[in-house]
Length: 554
RNA sequence: GCCUCCGUAGCUCAGGUGGAUAGAGCAACUGCCUUCUAAGCAGUGGGUCACAGGUUCGAGUCCUGUCGGGGGUACCA
Image (cartoon, rainbow, N blue to C red):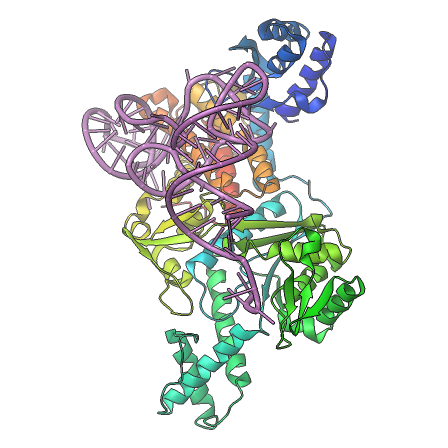
């Protein structure tokens, strides 16, 4: 049982017995005090009741505490502090019992079944295959995959999906770029304009076309061959890149299929039927002003081509039709203006857009020392995600991208990532894990291990030991909260704290020989090894959620 | 103009539904390795939480405005 809910229940009853009437159970909120020395969990109900009852909050707190059970083995102390907080300190017995649960549940510790029998689709990256993934895509890839992993841990059935537009102008320009490069290789003068893709990879693909077809395509004026070739080659690269980060998509969904299956036409027809579209200036407009927007939006250009909105609406309709309980879209902040149109479209078609969660992440500013690096796929002066992984490795890459809140701008200093990667916090967390593995191994060499049942955990009494248990027991709540709020950056924050508390625990043995893990006292040694193992389990589970390896040696 | 994200230590950033003395890493400075990894631990210095009002027992957190920066505001995606 979770301590929070237990306390909430206890206090709620005491409040009623003391003659007060809380408006709702949520009014008794149990929180973790920031300050050490204020217990493990605190309740501020007396402060809330004070203004309503026009009484001294400390007196109210006293009245409530009087109604709490006089002896409860779960707590070692209950006290009134400050302006009227009631602070609960968990008993060592309660903590040790929690430790036993960690050892029992192993890799499953922290998992819940909140999402049992529920499906969720996470759409992310979704970059059109016009060039290698950039660092900006990298942030989105890691955010999306980590959110997917968190949701899996709390029981959801997750589908990772990648959507791409292969029907529009961008891809045509890509094909044209390859075609012109191909002609250049045949000695013709360049027809490439500023609007075309300039990257070296375009020439590589053109060279492939040359090797495959010779000069047979010299006078071809149809880009489709070049476009298809480029799409295939570039997509392979994209898949390889994300695979290096441990990311695998379940579904690649392409725009073209929406036309082939008639889903685009269906949307137009449905909107027409509801009289939410009209023709003007040769284009077809979606009456988004009916949904509180400033202007109506074009969905079919005068050229007959759709704008991105139309296939996006059709695609999201398809997602809902596929029956997902929850749909998560992850976009860069350059897309903030597009999703209201899509949600309006979904609503207009009679669907519940409430199950769609749109998460916007802010940009990555790439720094090379003190200089900003401008990034543009078209101009090809970017640092690719692949190059970044080459430089700092997959673990550091993932950690950098997930370490901060997604609505905060990310300053990614390449020089720092390269030269000072040893100082990176990811090594700090991994090192704690490696240290534990090492100590377990060392004990094993001396003939002490954890085989043969749970040790006598009551031998754990030192402050460093209890602090570590406290921290480890927070993991399920951290994971659940991070998953439900879609805030993956809370995981690394927690892991760094946990690593610190572990390092402090192990370091205590350096200062005081009696605090060493492996001593001549075999029972105590086994109890401490169990604690080490629990720390290993939690760190490993946490790193796993981040898609980062847990090395046993460094 | 309008929408949106951001502004917290020298730098990069955390700060669950408002709570008690605002934190971490890096950088600077000082200690700590004969035995379980010093990729570590302990400590010192460093702040008008951009600014001004407001809401209340209480605001870094909520509301309004101002300033500064990012992104958007297309018949590009």
